[in-house]
Image: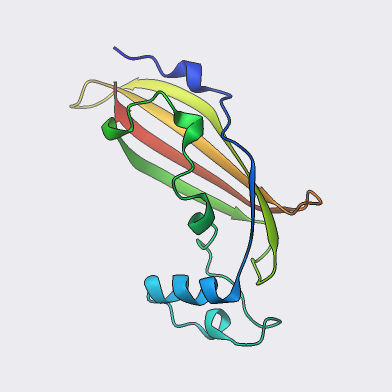
Length: 139
């Protein structure tokens, strides 16, 4: 059996990005969302789709290094929105494994539940989003 409890508290590198108006439109097109809020050419009226923040953190799984990710699927996914994302927003991402729970699966035998939390904030520290994902895997 593999024990993933050593991952608790492990963090990925902090990184920053800037929300771009064109990227908002590309993302809205990719998820087939034609809401006028996402397509406005006026930066004062344009907002990013709710899951847009995933564009920048995609592939940033260093916090889970050492876990055999081929054995995991994404379970729960929860996003707390502190405020909308707008073009020109500068964001800082902090990613951390916040918990690991081991359980007995109904049919699969022992499983591990790994919770990965991403905090998005402005450079000044204002919270923008809190993302919690639970990954479920066989040990």
